[in-house]
Length: 498
Image (cartoon, rainbow, N blue to C red; front, side, top):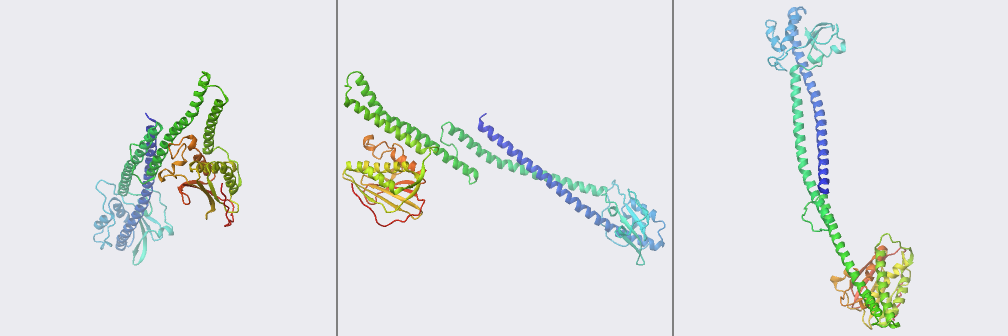
């Protein structure tokens, strides 16, 4: 089974397990707390019902006491009440003893076949227990604090006793109450299971959309690893997975471009190396075979080819060093203005060979940067040499150094050459790229100079751009670097021509 399939299935299993655990735990806690709350409320309801029943019973016992003048025979009356629902029992039992007080009926009769035992406790006015049928042991008298919880029985507006029923003394639910509470518990459990199952199904449905998208991305990653960069799907999502997909497509495009660029670099390097190597090989073979004389002129020509080959290898190494994050630069405080003056002086010798006039506009003052002195000179020199190479005989060059408002400064190098078409300006910083494809190494250079300059400047926190010429007719290269000191720049400029 492919690795990505195992990964997504493991993820699906883990997410499903987590979702089930969360839903079940949430259902259990919810059912537990709802059941507890329901039981407490139900017990309060039963107690209130029993109190109402005790009040009705007290009214009827009051009639009994008034008709007898004592509690004699009350045991037989209450024994009957213990076997039937009291309201119905007293309605039939006390005919002729006066009207039954109270018409409320707080509880229905229990169903046929169900235990209808009605628990009752009767005390005298002093709290002495006269009768009870409770299932627990009862003292011979009830103290005053508990006595006040009972329903008082009045005769001539004087309390002659107190009656307690059901949960007023024995907080135990009867069969009917337990049956009703059990039904409530079953309903809570059933509704909890239904909600949990529905939530689980919905979660699994939503999770399949997530893992399905991840499965596509996993397959795409395997395809990219095999060198297949074309994605066979498109995720139109606005969430984090959509962001991941867009990042993945960007990464794939970058990898594809890097792969194509690597092939191009290998091909261009082979092409650049092939010419000097072929010339060396051909001349040496001719001399070994006696076709060419092994004289000083021939050996000097071979030496020049080896110098070209060495220069190309050195430039490739310089580019590799500039791009390498591990390559250490010797960073220090450097006056960039001095570096420009030094580099222009050296480059002026090459410009003089083509009778190119260089105009400088360098403000007085220091432009302090933090960088590698030799690398910065190399970057400036590559830009100047490129301008000299593409300028015609008797041409012009313009060099300007100026500050910007955001603690940065610019070095502008402009030539009078043919310029760079707008659609190719970003390509001039690519390796081995030449605007004029007809130019060879002797007239167009190796095509690595500007690429090296770009990498060096980026390592210094700067940048380089190619733009339209503003003063001359050719290309305009603008180098930007950050200043580390505030610099006062005088308006006085220096000009020179070579």
